[in-house]
Length: 327
Image (cartoon, rainbow, N blue to C red; front, top):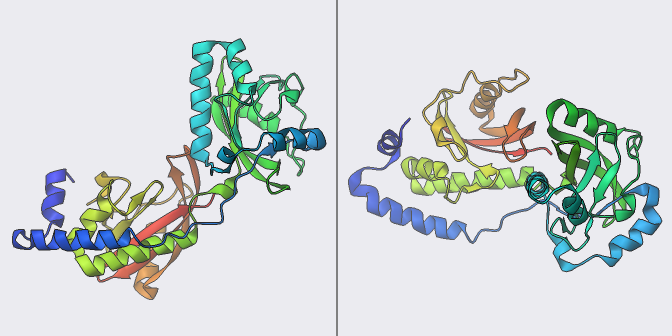
């Protein structure tokens, strides 16, 4: 549906326009003051357990206020992309030295770059330069997973990807699930990882997001609300968190992530596993008025299909939805 048709379909009548938008502006101003519930997010600094004693002293000496920032999968992708660009521009020798420099541009708290060759030798490591030159191909995580071999195999087959494993987190002094993103350049694999528990959004966030949207819908009316839900710069789009809305027949009437979806029919849409999740949303909304549906969906922020959970509430003939990825 084109922009003009979209505006004609969702904007209020002309004589109500100023009053309606003034009302919406006041409402949005109020919503900006509402508390936003965040998940329990904590950062961590990776430590290889094989050298836990010596590495811990090194890492603790390097702790600084900037290390408190939360890192996400998107940050890992960005870090690797920057490192790849630097490698191509500066060359192998300069790049490896910079990746391993604890005060360099590729070390920021628990976010750093490391690099392997195709035989599993560590060529650079931003958290512990003692690892450089060591063979890692047979290294396994605490659960016995040969994660380095997986990195090498996927890099050879696909050129880039993700591997999940368990690793020691210095800040919480515990072994936790971790995810590493990597890209192959020449005969080098450039990597950076994050602890998936650092996902920015929780199920409570999705419920709060829908609750805010329902309040706004009830106060501002359908036309203004659906337009605001679809506004990429509006109050209901914040990174991976956004609102989408369906009518009871499965037509998309608002979508904060992709305006082109508005007006399209979704009732037959299935996830990559063949699950008719939109039908499930419609059925549950009709029977209960609200609820949760889980499915798999592509996350453009991390370039991967992940489990997702969507919360929804039915208001009049509209089902207002918001989801979070289960990283």
